[in-house]
Image 1: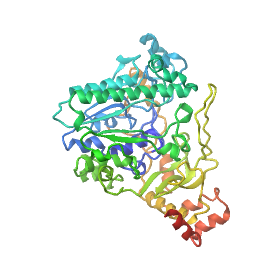
Image 2 (image 1 turned 60 degrees about the vertical axis):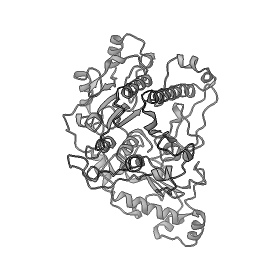
Image 3 (image 1 turned 30 degrees about the vertical axis):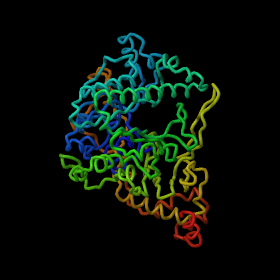
Image 4 (image 1 turned 180 degrees about the horizontal axis):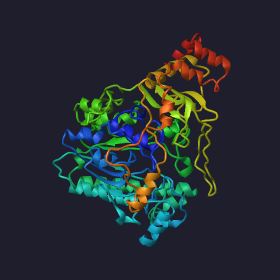
Length: 530
């Protein structure tokens, strides 16, 4: 997915965001919403097979009540951050804190003085161990904290028992930083001219080092030979903060390939055949596919239908199949890739990262089928090169609400999305619109909710300056009226979508869509698809 919260939910549930209500936005510190309790997540599936599960690092799936915390959702322990971003060494939540200066970055000042200064400015801390705050780590760089906790888990684990460790580093999320000594440890980083890119490279190098330390620990503890190591990003980079998606188009937060297509790899000395080691998998793989690939593929087990359909032991869920599928036989054997289509998203509120969040009256959506990718009513983004001068800057521009665009790309031949061929292939546009309409018919209301003043009251009165739940147990607020009002369009058919993309194309093309005029274009499209 194109941003933090929906990606994590999709990975852990094997369901598209439209089926969990997380199709819009990402969670901010004072917003009372998250992954609904009716959806089981990966550690709950693994618990049936005797696994102990631990999460280290970033959660970002809801923290407004105790029932939404990781240890209430199948994880046996949690050490990390509940919200989406933090200053790496002070652990001050960075989702909305704008306090300037080195205080936020370095954590070198006296903690008592820093605490007063930070909390008096409306900012707060976000570091937790299980369900308690963890205030004793001020000034310790969080990549090191998360690495050390993960290593501790491995060292204390009984090698005879199965283990699932979910390690989600905060790096390289903005505001990107690294200890000053990183540049003396790796002098080649000093040669990077652009300051944002230099900070990004330094922070990412420390993640690489942490992964190397974990692999060494696995070997030392006799866990390595029977381990499957999966490394994946959650979304594309933000070029404004030193990241790069080049040569792909766009950024985190948007439906172009630069926001959606990310690197991933799997590694195991015993589970992957030697003939497959070092090879590249060219099958279409969505983040929802990890859960079934692990359970049905690697473990050769059956996903418990009661967890899929009932949402766990409380029986509150809706009957719904997983959207993910196992790729294991295609990855390690000779089976063909199982997926030929994937839904990237359908959203009906404005603002890709939850700014505004008013009903649009139409959908922003994207779907890939075979070589074709259709993006409906999206903002217009560019291709962003990393600046090569010290004062260079990258500035994203999107006209997503005032001037939405619709695109059709052949992402096999044109992965950089440089040529919009929608007007040349109206029949393909029409066919993919029908597929989006098919998915919309099973879409659930979005879970997004706006700011809640009670959140900051809890931080200051009972949270000791730390983020934490402010609703009781499994209590939750009512649905947002924006989500409810916008949801009314969900059962409209594909003709509704067609009627709302007229501003993008000329009148003749829109009329072709309305009457389903494939005509002479159908044969040429078939040849192109072949």
